Length: 148
Image (tube, rainbow, N blue to C red):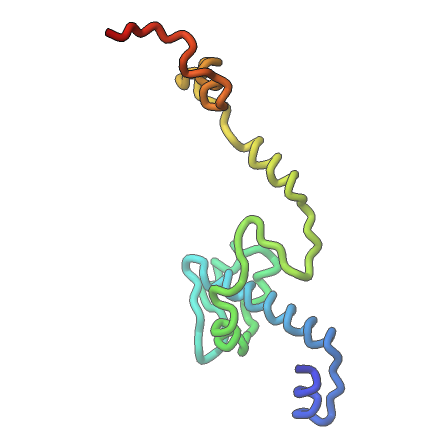
């Protein structure tokens, strides 16, 4: 890809890392604008190529998103076609450019801590039932049936 871009634009001499950095920056900007547009009261102006709303709502946004108040993003529609539904989002989302900061064990510990304790209304299983489920029980033991 680097070679094709350098051939198309003769005065350029990009290296792979430059293109990767640019793509990551565009993706980050796309996600920021997408986040703004998904909030209640915000919209997208196709003519201006920018997020729009009343001035009062901009102040409710985090500082890093407020920079888009008077800034256009002409690549939004094109990037929306590329990335919409194809970008990992959510609580455990990690970008390839980020180092994973939470190990699998740590995640499991956090999930376990969030679980509520067992309900006192649920009876404790009898030991004989546990033995039966584990296959440690002889089915003929303790049965007193008389056959005629």
